[in-house]
Image (cartoon, rainbow, N blue to C red; front, side, top):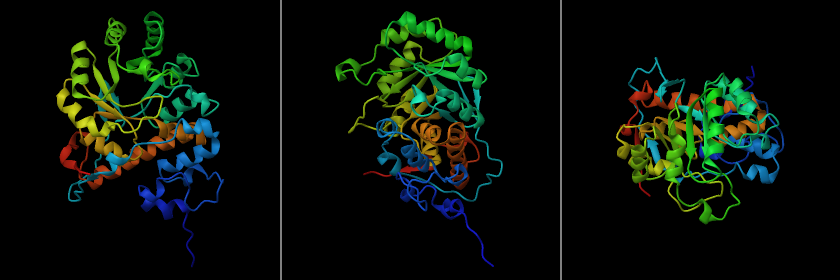
Length: 346
């Protein structure tokens, strides 16, 4: 009797393997778009996105810095009962289904005709909080309707603060639960000198009087973290994000522990940068992050399959996180700490 083995079943055991982290689909003819149910990990969505997008648009979503993640290994503990796995987390007064947020990406109609509306439907279906970018391709109230009013709003300190504050107030009226201010600029065409530094006075001016928490994204040192807290910021995102590619700089996961130590529990610390696997989320949480932002992978899902692709990407990472927590004997998010991982030196 013959038994038919699906491609997904045959590759399931290799879902996190380095051999699947490239931009190709093992076992698929070149150019074929497989059914969504056949994809086994997030990196396969990148390969589909490459086929769906023109080269210049795809280049805006490609790339990651994996070196530090690859030097961190998990400590397995199989003699612990994890049958009552709990992935929920608390963040700035909100209850999260898992500590995985859909990160802010601007002008998402570059990647799919429905843009943020499809992203919102996919994130909502996966029960993930979405961070909506200020320079979105759809009005914030329409995006908010897809998210049932549960979202964060993200801005850059570009242009007039009064105009920016007006857009923030509109987002709050639509249901935004927190404001995420990203250090730097969204305009990649500006010369490097124009993007250097952080306008702390502008951050302070924008945050004052708001009735929602303010989170600062782009923190990469303990000193920056402490300064932000003294200013009254209520959350931090460790991230080295820039519209232009950067090489030779520290990765967020590398500096995360030092920032967490400096904060000492005063505010939640999130991380954004090169998260591709559930084990990446595990490592960030073990180093003290309250949650992580998932950026480019959600765009790959959007470009490849629309809202169902976004949902599938997020749910794959959620499922991988649960698997790794079970393997390491951690039945809930609170059980994760630095004894869960080992950082190997170069």
